[in-house]
Length: 547
Ligand code: AHR
Image (tube, rainbow, N blue to C red; front, side):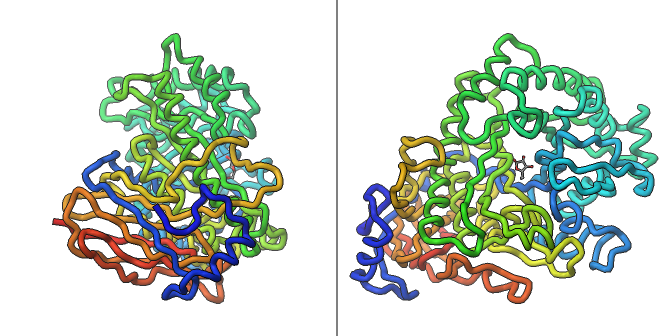
């Protein structure tokens, strides 16, 4: 649909640069190129579940400790021990669901060690994330309290690797049983007479790796064993007024069909079934976040097309086992996001996997969020990794005890997508929406090739007369003059917001916390078409009022 080079035509960095020099210059300074797109407002896909914009917090680096929890006696401004800035920024953003306590940490976590008087909680070694001493001061009550403060629904990842079905069913009883049992009374004595009503429970994390290096058949058998007791504990008819549970089985790393088949084969003969199925898909980067080259940026951004293909493929595989659409398991992208090369000094002073988020990261987040809109009928929940100070976080602090807390570029990308929550996604056409060929394997590309640039990515959702359109220009070298046909409704007016920086490595820092933030975007409707200019490296959301 475009008049300029697309991903289908191979363009080396050198030839792209010389071509760019021949193009007219756009209002933002980069050469201008026309792009056409189309939104079919009358072709509905599915509700954009708010849960697709969820998050994940682990006992890792300075995420749970320092990012969320600073303790009641901390000099860092706090609300009953929770970092005040974290609470306030997240309330504004809205975090639909928050997964905890891991990650790899989950399969070595024993929940009983994190309840009762904090001074009496045992110190344990966090063996996945640097062998630091975990004092368990942030436990079940503190986590649920945090979720209540920011308005998130808690999602617990239970321990399969070093845990037992007994420990799991006890955690559910402790959290959800109304009153009268030993464990529910213990919860009340620890300050929470009201049950926590935790619905989402992951049955282990990455059981193919840090969760115990299981084979898929063994992992599924563990699910069946753990779920037997968990379901009986939770069944609403056994616990009047109690909470039923939603059990999430361990899915693959990326689009690993062998894992999914091996896992799902074990459910053919009946017995407890999965409610949800969790895949993880990180978009790795080979350079430190603020040192990305154009080639490396394009290589990483192109992985989001592979995520989309993986979601479609994993959904197909699951549907092959669960053909009844009313009973099909929800597909979770339980961990996703860019995972760049860490900077050793930052990790040393600020915590393991502490990572900056740049304009390139925000473009990546937006490409992912566009995928979730377009595949809203296939996905149930998506949790970016992680909430604060770890990997592609929405917030960063200057170390666990640092006073500063800033909103990252990724925070702003999520803010731009907030208007989609609860609306119905609709079909969209754009050059950058095309799925990649999976030749060369997942995440790979043929040896020695230059990376073809990604192109305009678009998604849209609708509620009544309001249409929300999100657009991403992932190119560093062209401003896109976009003409987007709005079909199926009569578009009347438009207003937009944009996140943009021509420098792919630009980021918010403690000295300059607002370099990247949302700005108004000029957008207009002419003859039923939405028209706007997307500068090189930008993410925009436009709300169109239609008749
Ligand atoms: O998010 C960091 C780690 O990545 C998690 O602990 C693990 O599940 C994944 O490998």
